[in-house]
Length: 519
Ligand code: HXC
Image (cartoon, rainbow, N blue to C red; front, side, top):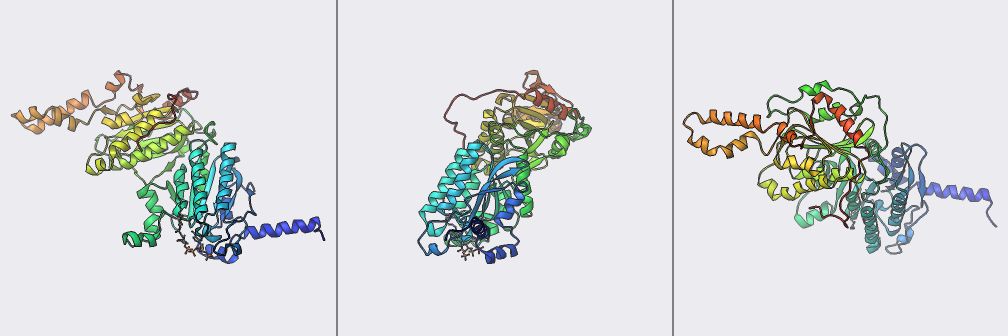
């Protein structure tokens, strides 16, 4: 006998309940006892209330090897669909570790590819919440194919829609490359880890004894490898961070970031900045203070705060509009540029340029870090990445030199010569080919050698002359490399005016298939 409509609906509801149970209550409870949220709870916290619409809830795998026909779970280990964040459309997938360890099958990959394709077609961000043991071993090559289908889509979507990854448990083997191809990766301090090969394989191949955290925990990836950008203490905070990140971004590369009205006046004077630069050039000050004091409402979202802290990158707003801020940090290694900071800065600049986010660059840089470690580590190639990124960027570029801007680092940090639109300097700026000490050592070596009086006195005199004549903002201003020398307390005002003036900027690069950034 045919089922009544009521019975059909009841069947549907029963099946939905089964699908929502993922790998079953026992496995769910085990994860909960480990302090983990479920795949669906994560989506609830990530998305606006009641906004989630799910796809492919009843999809199952097609594997018939290894007795897999007896291990079918509705949804196959990944929850996919769309929803909103602060009212804006996003596409999502959330991996469910309770189903076969969140491992990726052919059908699981199809579900992810479906939402990725929709995200690109509809011009909305895609957010992936990862919690997976990697390729589903029972499916073999089909799982590899599925991964590669996802990677291909990550690459095609790059620079078209924002792509953000959260890591909430294991992200092992093939699972790592999709996050690596996305724009930003957020981890959880404890219980999330990323590695290509796990501790057992490491032990077998290199004889190293290493824990999952030592190999690929949040600390490793946010401080040492730079694979992840940020980490938070709890899953809830990590999900909030993803929401906050998106608030600074447009939906896609054809749109602008949302305007966020503020009561913070555009013409706010920041008087503390008139006294922030210490009298001695060897004494540091905190560049974050300059950022916090000048952006709207002191609201700055730092990206990669623990990796290469000698360069600060992150998002803020001026006059309600999003900007990407890149700034040397004098409190770390005197703010030098080195391998890691160059890589960090270049990638951030390229993200902002791809998504129409203007760049504000704050400069206090003594140069590139010298030494064999840097040279052997490829500082020429890596420094070139920063040059390349700033040079090709066509978004509005506003630069403020607060103090040192020496040598190659002057060229790199959004200089006029790399199409900086507005380049300002504080009166404390020292813009020159090198510092007074180095210049005097080279230019006056013979004079000092032949000097009959106290050589230290002569050196001091020559250094002072050099500083007065060359290490100041006026030489650059005379040539128009600096558009104006501004009083520090007017920095916010001048930045906002410059960005407003540049709001309709149009610029382009020569037609090409793509450039060849020195990777
Ligand atoms: C199928 C898997 C699986 C996988 C875990 N499971 N990983 N099933 N394929 N890759 C299953 C387990 O059998 C188990 O099933 C359940 O998930 C939970 O796993 P546990 O081991 O009990 O959990 P835990 O102790 O927390 O350890 C988590 C783990 C571990 C560290 C992730 O499971 C693990 O090492 N898995 C394999 C990781 C790996 O080597 N991946 C690489 C695959 S190759 P039951 O039924 O008991 O619940 C790859 C290459 C692709 O990814 C390259 C593409 C470019």
